[in-house]
Length: 255
Image (cartoon, rainbow, N blue to C red; front, side):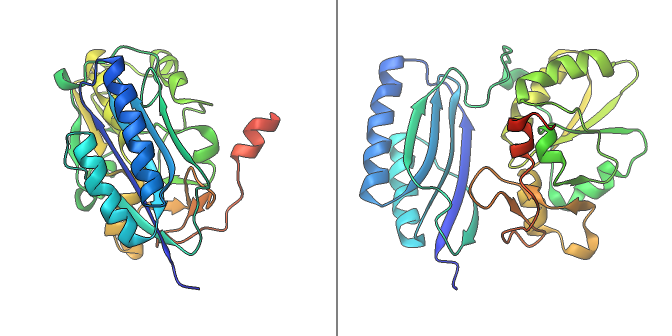
């Protein structure tokens, strides 16, 4: 069966302070999702927006153009394809954060160093680099980079406590981090910089961009990558994976 549906994700940290402004954007985005038969989730917050949606390619193109106008930005997205629509409903919601850390972070004042996928192997092969997987434990179980540290968190907001207990800016001079598509690193790298960590690296575009650009024989990735839709995992070719859904273990208390 042909991969009929295009799945895209995009985010941006930008000032969207007024609540009335967010309500207007929510209504407008919901309308264009309906107009172009797009399903998925868009999160709006005063710090920006975060989206994962799917639809037929010609509709995705029109949606991206319309959403860019609504959000006053040029949308840059990551894209994969699948035979079935991985999202079943339209869900545009307003939240306190587009990715929940529960810590105040000034992203503009302390961004990490973005490392392109082609340069990532060099960074993480450095023995002086502390390689941190900033995803949750159930995501780590499906796959990760060789030698990556698993903080064994159930949610992103658990990560600051792990850092407090296990990392020291004086000892860990170089910290490299990665996540699925980049958004969690975009927020956590400035958080680490604010704690005094001087050299903080993040995988530009996340795991998905790395798998897209780096040939399998050169990859330092092992296993599959958990994704937050009905595919559950994707393999090194970004095709639907075959790995188990460890997030169910989390819900049942097995993790």
